[in-house]
Amino acid sequence: MTSRARTLVGFAVVAVALAFAPNIQEAFEFPRFYLIFLFTMYFWISQASSWNILTGYSGYFSFGQGAFYGVGVYTVGVLVVKQGWSFMAALPVAGLLAGLTGLFLGLVVFRVRRLTGEIFALTTLAIAFVLASLARLSTFIDGGTGIFTTGTPLPEYLGEFTTAAYRLTLAVALITVVVAYLIHDSRLGWGLFAIRDDEPVAEGLGVPTFRYKMVALGANALLAGLMGGVWALQLGFVTVDEVFNIRVPLFVILMSVLGGMQHWMGPVIGAVIITTLTDRLNSAGLADVNQIIIGGMLVVLALAVREGVYVRMRRRWLTTAITFFGVLGLTTVLDLNDSLISDFAYAMVATVVVMLVPDRVWALLRDVFRRSEPVEEQTEAEDLTRTGP
Image 1 (cartoon, rainbow, N blue to C red):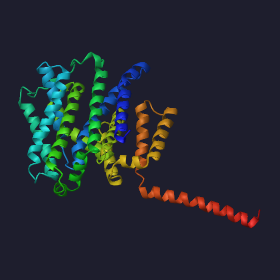
Image 2 (tube, helix red, strand yellow; image 1 turned 60 degrees about the horizontal axis):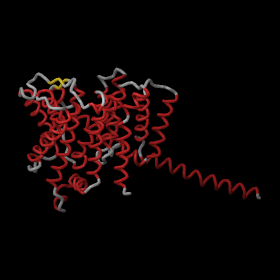
Image 3 (cartoon, one colour; image 1 turned 135 degrees about the horizontal axis):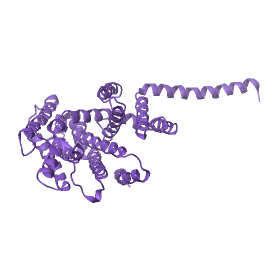
Image 4 (cartoon, rainbow, N blue to C red; image 1 turned 90 degrees about the vertical axis):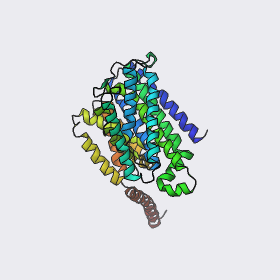
């Protein structure tokens, strides 16, 4: 079995295991907020991973995530609430319209050579403001009154509302991560990496740069809109200010930079860390300062771990495993916290702190440890020489 086949089988096993989390929650009577916490995490994993397909792989820094996500949210709101569509029929349309929005944006910006770097980033940011104004002015979309999505009927086979929302966000998150993985280890991914490193050289070597960038932007937008459509259920009341704001793009940037933008697993790790810390800080009554704390952490990590946390975790996998499971086991056994999420948060923070230790310090510690062994052996040999057999 090839490495890719093993990874895809692993994805399938994880999908099946996580899909039964609501059944486990009911069997052991865990609080429902664990499911809410998990599908919030799945939302951010999907958003960060889809954003990274364009920005992390190709190097084109985008602020358009909020626009694509917003198209998905409003598509479901309009079609389900105002037009009477079923949710499952409206959801793929949400992804499709968001994807078409991304492709239209790509046709404009990728054809103009000067629209790169910070100009490209500002252009993608502007599209969110345009869509927000369109939604506010159009009575067909919003008209400034908002849309109530509370009580949207869902298929019975998905379970009651919380269970259905959990499984839908899980499905979209898994699809997004699998797509990010497949692109990363494909000809398309190699072409995007070449564009990121030096686009003129990549084009000279025969890489179809325009087509590859369009595919990356289209995939980014489609997956962001698809998850936006699911998230419309969680919002309950959809408004322009709630949807088309800077929060989504800023958080996905934070998560991807923290985890590492050059690998498909980086945004997943970053999303798990930021979602958990945000949840715990909010629970501790620090909702007003949690973004300051997390932003400060990002500054430290950006300076100390430029390649992202995941790269160091992968390189120091044994240290990562010992730190994470050691702290998790200790806090669980000693019952230091009121919830498993808090235990998980402490374990993650401890692991991240250990990852901050520079490579040269670890190399120095290894050298000291290795040098100590021959010295001890030599001392024992000298003792035998002096004392005799």
